[in-house]
Image (cartoon, rainbow over all chains, first blue to last red; front, side):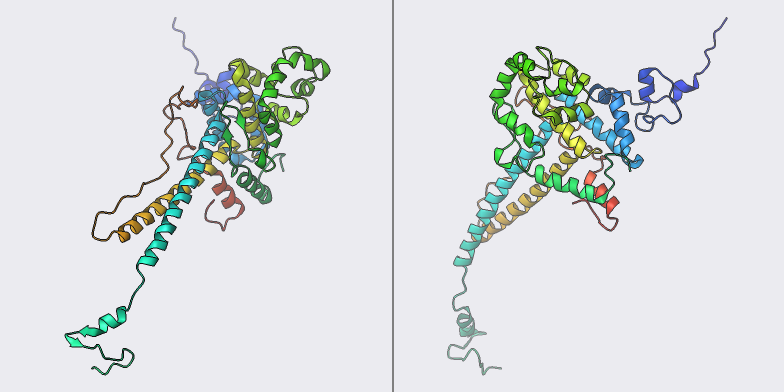
Length: 154
Length: 244
């Protein structure tokens, strides 16, 4: 009377890719480590622009330790392309270039201002007979006739 | 060694040099929203072949109008690559001229012709040229750096921005110190504090660059995204301490 549905072991362990394609997920599925079934959106995004076969080819061409980085970068680019279908992440690169341009010009301007102030500071603060002035009056004693290089005082 | 593998240290160095040369140049948008590259730097850019299309954007548009007639003379690069007849109204013909076969080859390798077709069909006709050029840019970046592609460039540029911001802050601090020394005993005249304003995601419709939603990266990869060159340099030169 009651129908007990057998738990399909493959259903619970299928990666997001195999779940998407409704197929059995083999033990050596190349996608499984990078597209877990708890994040189907990741594969949906990436698949939309690159296609599963291209992703598989890319994964096969690089070492295992770098594959996670590849998938993350593909996901990032796909997300940027979804948000901006015309420019994708190239728009971000362009924006960063503009920021660098602005920063470089601001830095050059600020450094020019500093060098101008530095030059003015040096000109207006040249020491003038400071040694003579310090020797004239010291502790109430008039050293005006003293030889600064051969003081007689104690 | 698998094809396209970038595990060799010299290849990684080449990648870094490529980025330093190519992405150190100025990339700007033409006022008509056409992706352009400065002609003087085109020799340094990896996508120099595309600059001729951008500089002759008008010709590109005219080429689009004449696509049907040009296809009788020679098929577009896409149809040539796919070994099929280039029909009048071929969606690829205006953007993949026969004299630039590598452009379509890269795009096809990374994205696939059918995905590109779908993408172009979803975009307004006047934006398709820019879309194709940006896809070509991403595809070439991915061919040169199979692991990180454009994201490597983004993280590199973001670090440049951070470094410049620090230098600017230090320079502004020096400027304030000088201003204080010049006016002793009084309130210094605060110099104009020029600094990079953080680029907040603009709303769609203002500058043409749409804002990204929550959880989506805008300026740089997420905080847990490893900076590619740091890892690559550490991997290839274990004695190095960082990627900068």
